[in-house]
Image 1: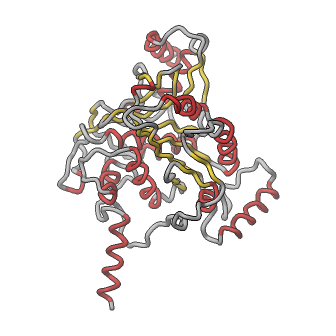
Image 2: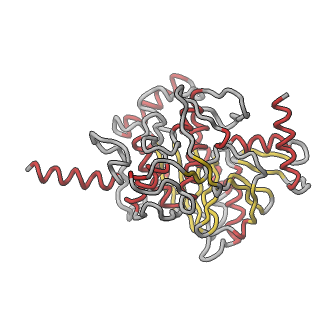
Image 3: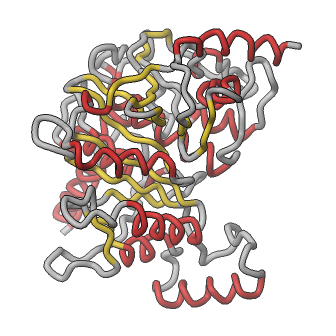
Length: 392
């Protein structure tokens, strides 16, 4: 009965959607407004929604205790990453229902993002890691800066063990991604051949996640500039195509100093989650669960015309296994690279010879952890060099 009531309430919110036969796409899933409106809203409300918060402990001990007015792109980055973690642990088709008991993995994912300095993807960690990217605490981030911060923070996250690849110069390099995603304990050639042996022994569809060497789940972020002052209409079809891919994590973007998390589209309108609501800090309970009512948006989804989008965006994709990445590459070849000129981005097999060598990032070896003690991994390396000089 409670579930039916929830559908009724959510359906009321959908009345403002136009009557149309056009499908709605949400993160790789297709919905039809004339047959399954309620499923569409349940799918949207299942996404983790991170907004401005107030009354958390001051960032860095003496910094701001609210991110209202400056943290919207950080919150959008958290939402994209949270969707990757949901896909990793619970699957894309997992659904959230109010008051329904959720698995431990769900609460553990939520705890990664609570506004505390000891949570790996908190506003504290992201803001302080941004210092290494040239952003003062309290300064607004762009999509690329958030992507670089997530890449660095993921090195300290052993539970999720993500490989985070942020593309350079609108180019995704297949060779570099495969090098990064195979377990680095052995040389990449040995790891690659060993893993293929494991897979052939288990059969083509068996999950080898528990084996080492193995494929590290991939968070792929592609920062793009889709025009100069306004989005170039030539990119619109390819941009929309990305939301249809089963690996889609949506896009970060919006308007100058006004970030949104885009999760899908209807026609030429984008559907997004808006972080510009200020809520009070929520901590976990003693048993580790989180009161999650304020982490799911149960209001009418926001929409904006694609042509109103600022041209600076970042696309996100999640590939849990190598076959997911291979499938993504095939879809890109078919749907994105068919454009002969002005492609949205390039996908190449080999590392460009004129680029610096690709070295997969590794966690710095330090005795202390947490961004409250180290402003960035860059700072870590500087400290290590100083210690070496002092010990000589």
